[in-house]
Length: 485
Image (cartoon, rainbow, N blue to C red; front, side):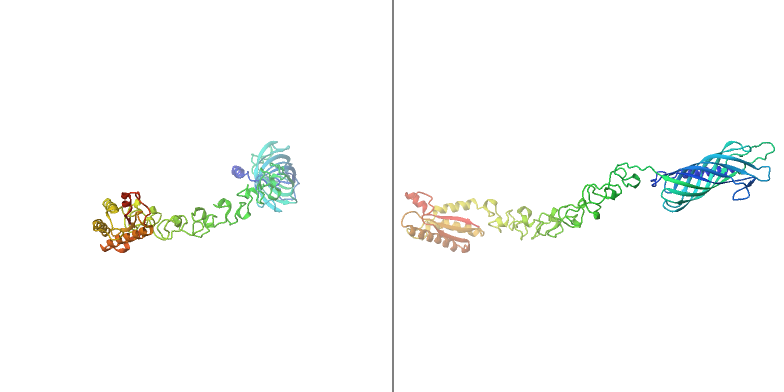
């Protein structure tokens, strides 16, 4: 039985010492107290526990306590008292004891509760001395129950009942004629005590707020925030402020919302412009689903695929870069169509329905042999004197021109008539117009549509040779042909 109680006591002691002793201390973590009361013996020769017909034995002592956690404290006590068993038996004895114990205290309610029951367990050692005792040090196992009553913040009334089991063989002499007493010897202490609680009020950060009331004991702070700082002065302590260096709003945990759009700056891609949540705080002025910061056309509704710009004709070229925004065309021609497929946009193509070359503004290149025919016409067309009647010698070259026009229905012909400086100016102007018109009619008579020919006379203007010579004047009396499209 004695060994079982010893190991059980050690197990309880080990459980309590493994508890978390690093928990935050209460306001007054250290206590000192005085304790005293009734001492009773119980053993194999009898028991005086809760009996009034035996002699009174008492005890007094002191106790030092340390707060470990919300539920646990560690107590060190010293006791001095008397012990004995006086009866009409040979084994009666009396003597004194003193000793100390280390006890773990388990509380069941918070410190602020007025009435707090608790349990005690621990180990100690007592010296029993007297004529009939061993006068030696004996190990004891402690177990008990008690009640604390808060009389004030610092003063506590303590009532307890503590049993001390003797772990040695006996506490009495084994002198001849005296029965051996020692198996299952108990000492029961019924005590009342007063305890004074105190602590060392530190102010680690020097902010005037003691650490025990300081939520930020290592950082200087303000009274209204229990010792925590508010660096940006926004009324939110830094420990709760996600933006401690920028004044902000409580609804955003201390972070600012500069543009007031309900999105804190730290999550706002456009913190100075009020915007929409779906665009991380950026605006979309034209409402096309593309935020302005990514919209190349922020004031005109457009397509997401074209960075927010419109494409009226749907050709993949945004209207702002499309030279023909209402007509679909290829990107390489800036969105303009090319009906004849010659690589020249219709808007720049003089001949949009006939493939041509850029050098000729989209019109086909005039063949070399045609150019030669038109060149011969400069000197190959002659008229009777002072008349618009064409000489028969000119028919050959005019017939060739008519063939060219019929073979190339996309050609248009411009005929310009000129005169030399001989004669009256007005007459020369009139004659140049009539001769140009005669040539126009001749070609029309050869089957060329009149809508494809136009003529005009310029009189003596634009001479190509010297009018002071016979040869020069002959060259200036001419008809020029220009192919148009």
